Image (tube, rainbow, N blue to C red):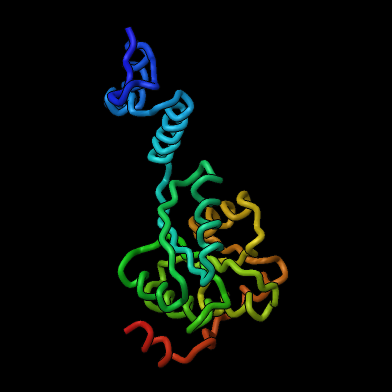
Amino acid sequence: SSYSDIEGGKTKISAEKLLKISSALDVAPDVIVKFDTEAALNGAANHLLRNAIKLGLRKINVLIVDDLSVIREGLRLLLEQGNDQYNFKIAEAKHGEEAIAKVKKFHYDIVLMDYQMPKINGAEATQVIVAYNPNVNVLAFSNHEERSIINSFQKAGAKGYVMKNIEIIELIKAITTILNGGNYFPNEVLPDLLRPKNNSIKTKKFVQEKII
């Protein structure tokens, strides 16, 4: 016998196969048969399987901070589909001040921070965020290669700095390094990490005003 969907049944599968699929995916049979093609059914099954796999991975809360929606969406897609180590739960902010507001309300394991944005730049936002909660790990994510900008993030308390054209493998490596308590900066600025931070990007008054 076969089991078809309630609207005239484009999907025809055996009752035995239906029960196996239903059991494997933990989905009721009447949901399975609503897919109108075998390809749609297989696609849904693969999607559910990927989600099931991610449930067993370490959950990492990530905040992506960038003024360009295309960058935020691209990075979200890269993190969600390009790795098999973490189950990323991703939020977004359009600029530094929005990021500061979100960090006050929720704990993020990693904040991916752009540099050039409206209102305040990424290094200034990093300084405020780290002052508010030193346990937040900021990973700068920028197109700027200038050493002065990289150093400004380091002074502000960021744990790393990567370029936006980074491969997903290296981005995951950077995130893993930071989550394990390390830093991830370009080799040319590593000597600067040995120097004491003076956090002189913005004044103490500026930081306190942003925290309040």
